Length: 213
Image (cartoon, rainbow, N blue to C red; front, side, top):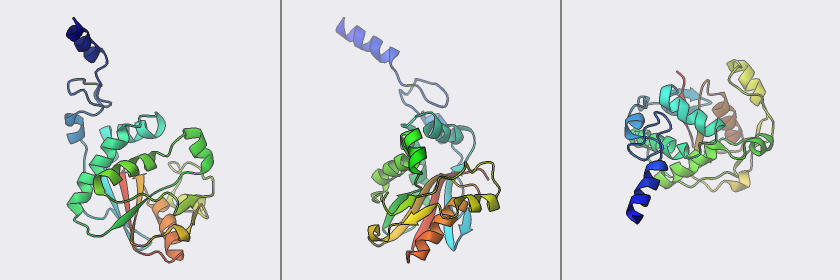
């Protein structure tokens, strides 16, 4: 009887895939949906402020749903799968070196409203896979900016002007891996990279989970 009720509970509370709702694998992302994610070629997607920008996948279908779920709908478990997808791509690049992960920060007002920084969650999971430490103190967002998605590249750069400061005393040496969820025009990366370089930090790579292009 006990075994029957345990089996019944497993059936009732079985996890469903966030993308297709299948409960066959008892997972928040089934292997079929994970394998459907469209990876980018293992090469720089953009080149901004003298730095390579890599993007793990195309921002469409399931990857778009995962990122939006994490960002707007409190689907925090999606960070695990997004980070895994990014790490699979990262390994294909064959880049060597010791890096410190710097997730793109949120302004404190937006952080207070959202309760968490989705990019930090991805960074934490990517850290577990790669062994690279996360540094959330090196760069701070000090300007409350407008949402970027409706702005042109010029408007984005103006919107992000003076948005970040670098706490140079938090830099411990080595390469910097700036992490974000989406890279559209590369303006966020560009402004952060310029601020890091202004503070004498030049060994930088930018890496986003997705690009819409």
